[in-house]
Picture (spheres, rainbow, N blue to C red):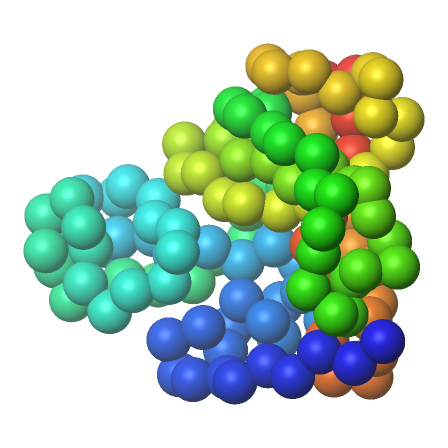
Length: 131
């Protein structure tokens, strides 16, 4: 499978972190709040002083759905679960949730895992965890 990423300076640290198995998010240096998706301004206080930090990789399932029809790179993997994960840092991100579908439910704890797609792309997924 090949996925083409269009890296820009705003998201490059996220994708480079994923290749190194690090979940990178932003944090505002003024108000200290965490930010995801990548932006040049803090959406809370509008400061331009945002930095990249490594997230804990732990969170809870906020919502999820089962995908039965997917885009070409993923069509042979259906059905699979995609969810909104609320990280312990307070931000939410969309990602695939891997594991036994019948065990997945809202508010269950998850931990990040990484799926190397090819030499250029590694995707952060989440799996059920104990904490």
